[in-house]
Amino acid sequence: MHELTAPRAGAAPQRSTRKVSWDAVRTGCVVLVMIYHATHMSRVTHPELSPRTLFFPYQVGASLLLVISAYFAAATIGRGSLRRYWWKRMARLLPPFVGSVLLIWLVLRFLRPPSWVEPNGRDLVGHLLMLWNWKPAVYAFLDGSHWTVPLQLLGFSFAAVLYATKLGHGNKIRWVLWTAVLLPLAQWHIRISGAPETYRMLVDGFGAHRWHLFVAGVAIWMVSTGRLSRRHFALLLASCMFAQAMHNYIRLPDGQLDCDWGSTLGVWAGLLVLTLVACGPDWKLPPTLARGVTWFAGISYGVFLSHQTIGYVLLHYLDTNGVPPLLQTLAMLVTGTAVGWALTRAVERPAHDFLMRVYDRTAARQSG
Image (cartoon, rainbow, N blue to C red):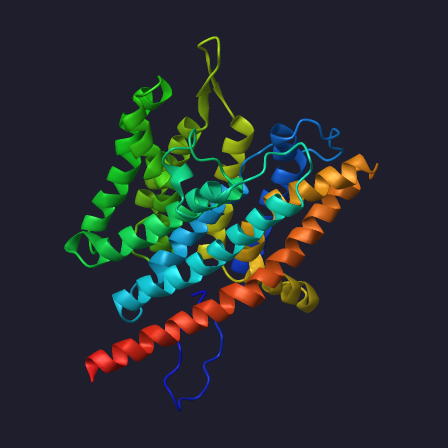
């Protein structure tokens, strides 16, 4: 298991069973996200930037991070109180999200390039409320990376509700997983053909076209713990892969369909790697590399939240001052890591610890 249940007061410290291989794949996914944004989405969003020397146009890392989140949701949901499980996830996700949004808004207000639109208070409130998840044409992103946050919040909340019922246990969970994959697939033709706005809002708002990523994460955990046969897992994972391919289809202006096969194959390969990590032995990395990977994994959520828009501002100023594109990309990676580390140290960890103390004190008073 990746996390340890907190030891009882006065008990001997438990030896960590943390697998460095999970830290390695999480680190790799976040780095892929950063490179994708620095070398591809930066010019899609801001075409005035110089062409990039290093070019990685595949959306892979963020999708695999959702798979990893689902894996650890399944792995940890049975530990202790279900309410504490849910509160712990909210305490981990929301404070750094709020902190990163405030920081990004301030950077855009006071450090943005002159040609960029100045965000106002409505933009700040809309982003904090994640309204872009429902109405992206009305509420603009302050940072496009944040699209995963509401899906994780919904995923953890749904997992807690499901686990509290019979549907979250035994054979019934298999039916839930298959439904979560097949139901959106059955509606694919509606989504790809220009669905009514209300339908699109609900489907995108609840992330239905990405449910297969959560299913894949849960299925990987189930097969790694013997709760799912290998044959059943192979069928379920193949269905998730097919759903990912269908998700990556778009309709071109001339009416033809086109699939982003590069991103699709990248996610497929990532799913196989995650399966090997879950089912196989831990990786034996050199001690220095292992410490670095574990350190970066520990700040990866803060890096993910804060690197994109702030990085684009940095790219603009470096580009206008003649810095070579490859050095611009490196500068964005280093800056994103530094800001993510600061966000983790100043907001994520202290806020999480504070909120968990509040919960535990409240729970102790209620039980007493």
